[in-house]
Image 1 (cartoon, rainbow, N blue to C red):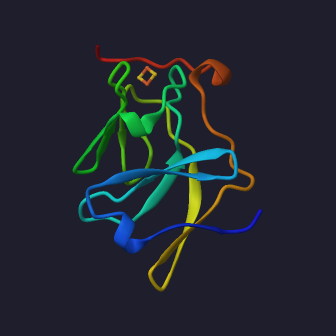
Image 2 (image 1 turned 60 degrees about the horizontal axis):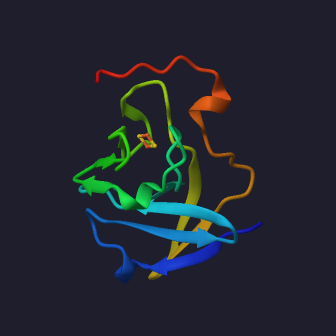
Length: 120
Ligand code: FES
């Protein structure tokens, strides 16, 4: 698959997040304050809850289910650590935002077998 247009820059303001499907893949677009637009897997790696139902504040994404938090600039787990959101390629052309999901597999905690610890 190639890059697919998912929205225009007017649809995603700095500090916001939006879910935009690419085919059957739910893609979470985030625009961290002071950063650039990123596209991450739309489903939480913990227990597969939609991340777009959570909160995005500043640069931090919080899942609504058990409040795992992720860095919106990198996708890295803040709490717990050791769990990073899969990231898709983003391309901006003019006012349009494109995402390429090819070759990227979402991360799921149960599938990785990694030891994930939480401060909670
Ligand atoms: S499903 Fe997201 S934190 Fe548990």
